[in-house]
Image 1 (cartoon, one colour):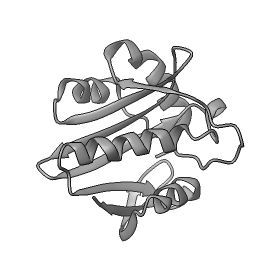
Image 2 (image 1 turned 135 degrees about the vertical axis):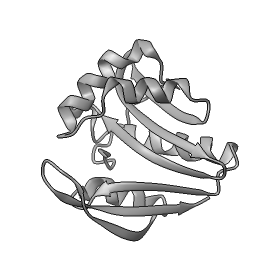
Image 3 (image 1 turned 30 degrees about the horizontal axis):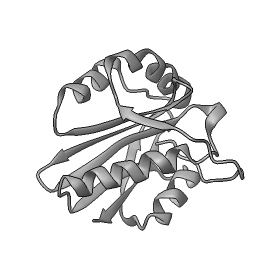
Image 4 (image 1 turned 90 degrees about the horizontal axis):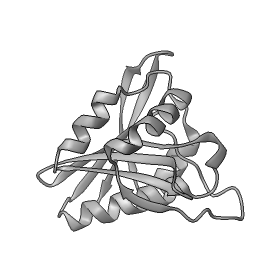
Length: 157
């Protein structure tokens, strides 16, 4: 997961829209730039096709600058990914995506939101803690390239 804290005084105004096929080329560019093990385009297409998924695209001046992907099973959801293009990090885009995801989950009667994050991703972990996510466990060796533990976090909605 890639997320940022508001390190700059200027918060970027973004428009959030549902993730759609037309966004995937830009999403994949961000995904490949930020992650050692990027999702495949088919992963995103699968989420677009599922009504139980809550996937958002952040746009600035009609340009894709970030996205989030979440899927819901009954009253439980998992936040699979939040990513913001490097040049837009630190301007509250991840916060905007996270807030919209939490709001969307509440609207769909989700009671618990889970996520996994690289244990070294301090910026993301601090963001999640700001929103009252609690650390509930560790998956040893969950990530590869490089091998790293995942911190499991949970938010009671």
